[in-house]
Image 1 (tube, rainbow, N blue to C red):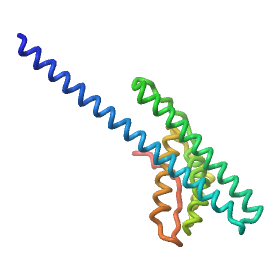
Image 2 (spheres, one colour):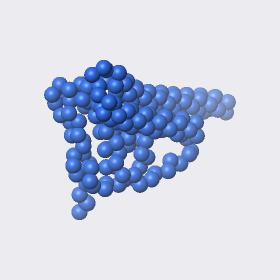
Image 3 (cartoon, rainbow, N blue to C red):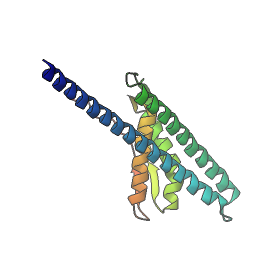
Image 4 (cartoon, rainbow, N blue to C red):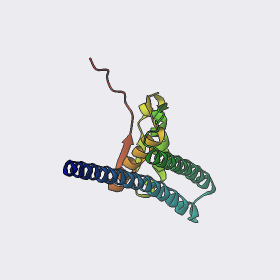
Length: 178
């Protein structure tokens, strides 16, 4: 029955179009996420460089700011590596992502360190809770993804915290279910 075959082909074509549109939307969402992460990191580097260029910046402060730039550029490198991995996942959807044990406490400390000058330049205090700095909280995850999400949250917190406000970022373990 030719009519039934045509209907089946039309349905298959419609499903294929919907699947392609969903994949395209996911790819655009991934590109937007990476672009957002790159913009936030670049903003931190630019703010640090602006402070460094000020004639009022002492030599000791320059070394500290250079260390901050180094941290922010390391974050940028990780974000770019994440973008490369993400593009591989989009082009190879069957590829398995390897999850590794990561120190969430270290990710928090790195994120706070990398964003501290940006926060200070906006008049906002940014700290990591003391528990987060000394505790060893581990998770099986993809470090670039956790770092990217955390940096995005911190950047938004800084953006929407009024001058004179403070932000504390921390990690705590969930209580075991039972």
